[in-house]
Length: 320
Length: 104
Image (cartoon, rainbow over all chains, first blue to last red):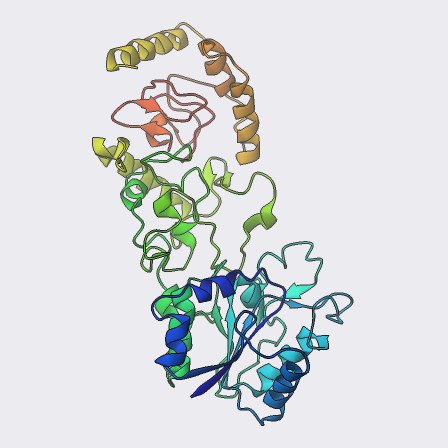
């Protein structure tokens, strides 16, 4: 039996909603099939008031073993570093986070806010928010870059806005069943099993990307969303087109550009007007090219792809 | 528009440029904010104002600039239809033409 505690800082509850919709495995499966004992969760926890406070204290003292500490939302430091803007169970949440992280075997950050600050940490970051071990791309965050949980692993980051339900439950199963050490993680501490491939991997518009046929307006039944509509699929690491949302679809499959929400910079360009759903360019060339591609190669590839494009690539393909 | 209509309009546009139509090839939009400013001008035109459309967008009937940019490589160009798919332009074009709304 692995004890799991889930707390929520500066957050919209989106990752909680996502978690509760998990299917493979479901939140119930975690309890019934994988031996996870949910000590407390914002939407599931039974304890209130003094009882909850005592439970948290017991975790810190060691009278209750804390195997997995899950944090959703940012660590709020405002005002003036006190964290008073986000109080929980009688004290600033950040104080609970520090002490619980120090006693937990494994610490898992769920969603962009907990991993790198997400939307709350967007400039000018009025709540002085940060992620557990990152602030955007900067390694450190609230716990510091050298932090390691008791079993010797840094915070395991499962980003997304929200994170896909099954990324959450599958990682929780892995760590609860003693496989945390088997998780390969990348430079941003994301499990590679989910975050090595690109959002574009499996996108149904890949042929339009290959032949450089652009969607120029929303709702078009052909065309890649990268060239004009700001899609970040070729530069974003996530399995959104491999592990589908609601087992049905993904943003790009539905004609919605990827916003790059599993990357530390999200939301990109600080949401400045004109930067959302619009490919940013410099002298006619995208500012952010597909990962690993340079400008010269991109221009050559475009010329070759345009020349080779078949006629069907210019016709509507997603017809009803 | 039918293919014949497209071809006729393409020929008409080509003749306008061959006859010396002066268009606004500069400044080339450095970023998408400047690009958007040109689009705003185009959106203010009436549907039939073809010449103004060509002038504002800086059409020329040959490759342009040091890199010999042309419609053929532009992301708005549909190769088989020989068509500019930028909604604000939406005109038949020739692969060897160029305009300052070129993007790749």
